[in-house]
Length: 291
Ligand code: HBI
Ligand code: FE
Image (cartoon, rainbow, N blue to C red):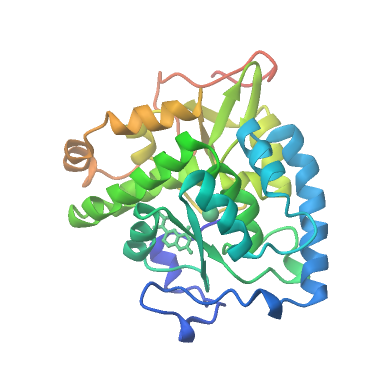
């Protein structure tokens, strides 16, 4: 789950920011992780892996297989050898949330920031900020998908302009409803590719199987106009037909006019449906209300 920029400043950030460098990175210090932490990682991973098998996008499952990090908290240096050779992406270790512009700059340079600390035992089912399990299990497998890796870098490159045009909240919504909470149709099945879903035991099942959920076909402008909240579960989700819809949809879009047109317009509340707009529905999700 991710707090919006505004709430971030009020969140008591857990990580060790005192030793972060100019790019807000810290050494992962993999050797300092205790056996208890690795054990907690193993239990989290085993439970979530079973759910991902059934409800996560095939590219996510393939990425998890390729990374093979069931037994211990991953050592980013070792993962980077695989990632770099296959995708030119690198993981960088961070203490937690980092400023928007720093975050975008990392993505634009094909560096993915991964929080180095693991959640406490009492948070095993849910925590608000991203930890190493959310960031790694949720985000890293898709870096191995060429289309998604290119999309994420392009997203980072778009960040600077959004900040310059005072339209960051609109771009943040795009991240939220795709990279964090995106759904994808694969054949007749509905799967999750967003890290906030892929790494969450409860919401992964809810978002992909519950009938009384508002799911809308992915449309970049609708997404960028849609507010989000940090409730336990999202009030709406957007469904893509394939990863290339993200890449094509966004590379074809001139964000400037979209920012100009909608920047001052109050966002659409999460979960609200514009009268008459189509909702996404699938034959095997019977009973989803079309009303
Ligand atoms: N920092 N570590 C970290 N991880 C994020 O996902 C993140 C961030 N800082 C800013 C940020 N995300 C937002 O700008 C994006 O969600 C748009
Ligand atoms: Fe995330």
